[in-house]
Image (cartoon, rainbow, N blue to C red):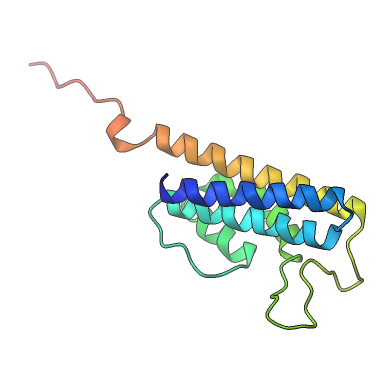
Length: 147
């Protein structure tokens, strides 16, 4: 499994966990894992373009790095910004993952977060597939000029 495939697999595992937690009404944790799904998808794109995967968690910063490689990433900027609010470092006891300033996310907010995470993951998978299809070794070769 290549580097970017490992990141995609990791993203799917987080998405699966988010969906399980959603069904158990653990919306704050499901939202946190939705953010993690998007983070890992964006990192997969960077890995797929032979870029060093940064040890950062802010989706807006990861998005900027992806956008520099592929302008179509503009399509998902709002989803990244929306999900970014669910990342809260868990190094401190008072910081619970996925909790908003107004409290725990609602079912509707969680559903929206899951939809956005799935959209980002799907989008990244498609962009990776498209870039693999355009790899230099696969590019059509021009015919030599005839004299």
